[in-house]
Image 1 (cartoon, rainbow, N blue to C red):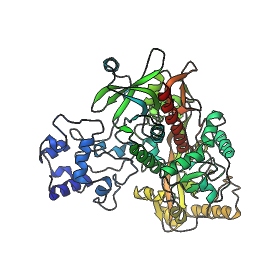
Image 2: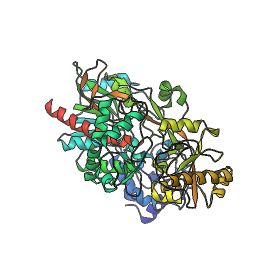
Image 3: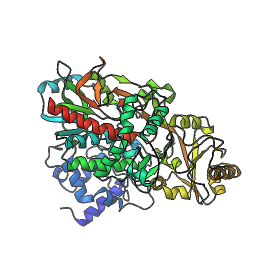
Image 4: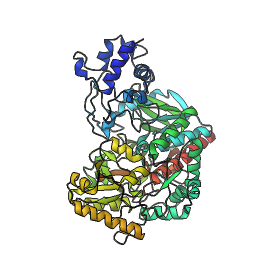
Length: 593
């Protein structure tokens, strides 16, 4: 047992209140903990980890330091806390704190806040092709399967977790494999809302909407190059998906509007909290309660098929257990897109070369590689979306819901220049045409009070504040008179109920309540519309045009749902609706084969 004094000391080290320089001799956490005992301080035995989740090791961490929430309570006031985050599930301390090598702050894969973490190194990630070690992979396959299950799901974002819950609901034994040390994929980053039509929440707010209007908006937003059959599945099942999540414990009662929508249909938690981490946590809890076997640090490098082309399992590379094979009757690919892989993004859209990305570290496209190696057909890979409001200061996407609740975009001259709720591609192009290739998202205290997600941006220190417009303009090196005129003109537009200058349809409120706020924003790669080809039952089509037996896919890994451009709010609907279908169909296939 560690003493209370030792616990307190460790808590101070984790919080950054003490520097590792205080202890000059240890070079890493293993050295430091070695001063308090043997290898058994962290490991169940001297052989090291027994599973890729590092279950025992993380339990040892929390037995001394406490949970994420408890650690966050010990941190210095005013700092950007990595322990007060949007991470979901049973978050592993070892995601950042390594024992025998330099620790890295996983948050730095998106952010850069210079955390003072003991024994730390700099975040870096080298993309390794899935077939980089083909000889060893072939040998592992030749050894045969280590275990057998009904359904394997690849990826722990919303699509993968929804598929896991659905497959378990349909009686299938499930193993879910996630290559990253933390679950949730891009879903945990999503902030704006979940588009759905003809819902109970809309009815309660007297919002009139139709599934056909959602279909029309989605098709128009995607340049009418979407697969109409998939769009119909998305819209016609959207309200049922909201009901399904609600039955699992989700709060989706707040309804706003995202760009490209002609009706308020973006569902989110009460007060406008971020939707993604909430939905991901609800799905995680549901999957865990249903005994889904979820494994982190577990990268699928190959889908295995028999001579007829039927899926028979997967080859996994565990970060700590090495290569092993799982036999499975069906596989659901839910690995997301490739926005974090700028080399691949630029291959399909050279204009985005060098762009930052809003995605999590694992969105590199290796799931797409695995699918293609197994013969999957692809479509629409050339369509890559930039999100218009990425904060270059904080390395974080600012949700479209801020604009949906009333914020406006102004350039460095203090002038509006675009319909704030146009589609993302048009808003991004307009921002890039401004001086400095960035703009400012400007809003007042009434917008702040309407959307609790904004408090997170204030915590991240990316929000400028002024007691009045002149003070705000001075902080932004912007003409105060011009900014004042812009807001006065906009408020007049709101009163008139018509935006004759930029034709913004939704004008929720005047911006007249001090203090005033601004966030610098610029476009960043956000979503990849292309991916593997699926039918309405989420079965993956091969390059021959025929379905690949036993292979299913859902979420951003697929192509066809969004056409040339995804509407804000449609991603959560996509992953939940098609994830549910994929899990159900994979379970059904496993029973029948």
